[in-house]
Length: 81
Image (tube, rainbow, N blue to C red; front, side, top):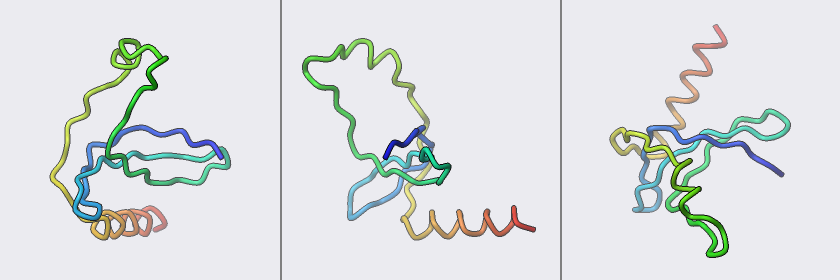
């Protein structure tokens, strides 16, 4: 499976840890949330090149995953109307 992901401005609490929510889509077009606590670059890769690509995204206040999913369901219902 391959996912294409992009960072959102949303930070949520996941088991007591603040994580950034990334929005993703699979090769089959299935939308997903990815909860990222840390990113790392392998030692043999170019850290400077990675850091140039890394974009600082402002953070919104922390929410629970339950709140995030409830908002997503409400948005889906609104779009369906």
